[in-house]
Amino acid sequence: MVYVCHTCKTEVTPEGLKALPGVKCPYCGGRILYKIRPPVVKRVKGV
Image (tube, rainbow, N blue to C red; front, side, top):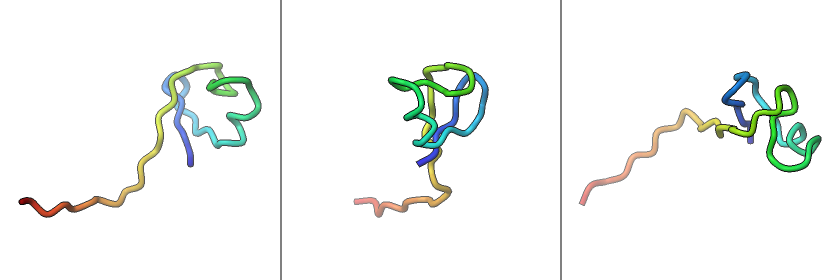
């Protein structure tokens, strides 16, 4: 699963997150990370 840093907009892999304690961007030290969602649209049938 790949994350994107809010501050520097770089993609961070889970291996990059293990480099520092806690949840931080290894490039800028930002603590806000967004999970990249797949482009698949889920269709739910209405009731």
